[in-house]
Image (cartoon, rainbow, N blue to C red; front, side, top):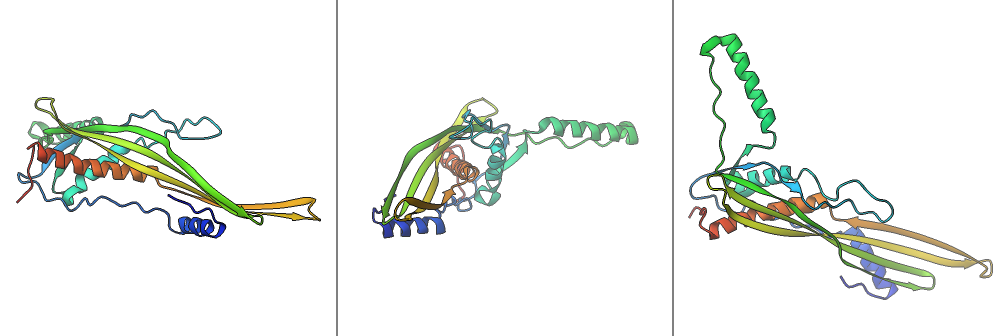
Length: 250
């Protein structure tokens, strides 16, 4: 981003930044053709924050994590929605203990009320592929900068910062344990701070009066992670196609 050094152009550009923050483009999840051999059943156990990063603060130490701890929900949603939901069937594994406990309760209640002839529960679906990975990087201040100008006591300034989040996804064969495909995706997170200040001398120049107004625009970290995961799922399908793991419908 280039900011002009003249007062008027800088004010115009900072105003445009405030009125029109950078728009994030969502990946086209629905444009993929469905798989040739039908829906693929996959399991998601955990998709964790592996960065160890804490929320950035200039003043105090923060115990809050810099990125979401529930990224597996984004991954499940991306798998279920990619290609209009025709690519993956996701089975529950993150809460498998609760699922097994509930099935045990149902089985016991049926045996109590129906006796030895109690109807058995349908077997659980099993997955041929485990989708694994995590958020492996969150780099702050990879690009920083700014510019400002002041004339006749009136001036404006702009500061910007860019962070980078990185996620990785891999498909693992349940049968052999082989990593069938692995992809890594990055997404930039932009932050802008715009200020407008006025400095005026009063009482024959012996006192000064200064005022300042500003605003900041920050991309959502959670949205960036969600978009990075969506892009990774799409790239995983493309990588699997190149390796012959599956095919598109003609």
